Length: 273
Image 1 (cartoon, rainbow, N blue to C red):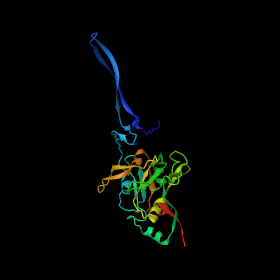
Image 2 (image 1 turned 30 degrees about the horizontal axis):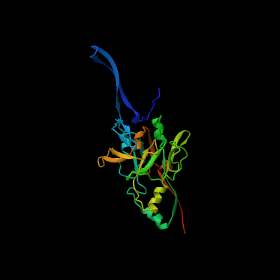
Image 3 (image 1 turned 135 degrees about the vertical axis):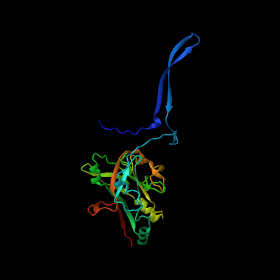
């Protein structure tokens, strides 16, 4: 009675057609019944890690309510809610410090010679929105990456691996849903490497992409058709298409009663003499 969601590896799948036919035996002048099979492969995995062949999914989504679309594509950096959805759903772009990715704060940190010990982005779940929807399965993990280059913003070689599972990999970078009474409260993503790269290595304060993930080891991006007349095509993390789940997070422009749940950038630093 419950829906079952499967993620199939179609590299190992095919369509096999079994059929029977008549064969005329000229030696004996008789018709013989024969049977055989015809195999149609879908896509094949290559030793290089790439695939051969084409595969297409058609994903049909109901239109978002107007209250949600009003929060999307505002061109501002102060949305009250962040809506994330897998499949052909939605993702978010995050600009640190201000909507134009200013480096004024980075220059201030450099001038004060501060040592960054830890930096986090903390996203709080809008429980009222999810509870009102009812029966929502919350995404167990979110993923933040450089939306301009498609690259990671943390070093996986220096991160913590507790086990080869969704929740055991890269636990320092994190992004795992924190719960209370079996309900999601917040996600925390550690971006210390990203901030330090801007301070120490003069990296650009790039726009960040925020999506859902069902496999934190997969960091590829691909061309996608966007619902944006000004930018109809863009690169989006492929991993977001692998999950049907969705969630609602608080942004920065929240109501006074939700002030403690607004999106937070935490920076812990040491002052030097």
